[in-house]
Length: 156
Image (cartoon, rainbow, N blue to C red; front, side, top):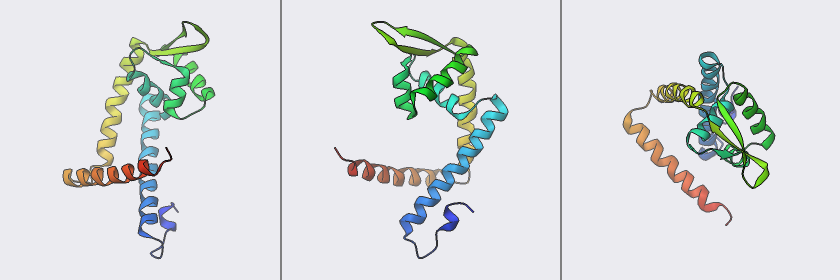
């Protein structure tokens, strides 16, 4: 039984919507994880790290990667070690900071990531194929309202 199935009509509509969003997210993420493993022999965290590096052509410090991915430094180090061993990323010392390292995609890493990113995009488009363009626009707009309200509720 998924989380959504546990909600009943007596629960507030907002709670049922929250559980439906979580269920949908989990279903799509499970499919993405499976396809990354099957088609590219990789994991979602490795894909996510490479995506962060693709957006930063000059590379990122390990601490910045950790912050952006919202995981511990140890997790980032482990993933980086794997990717470096495969020749997908380079790690270099940061000038003036002996404890810090900067990570960049290699040319091979960039090529591999671009192939994965194209497939990932197609999988996400497929996940939403049951919606019309109008449905997608409406859902995007409504979730934008939820996001804005949540941001406004955060302490300064």
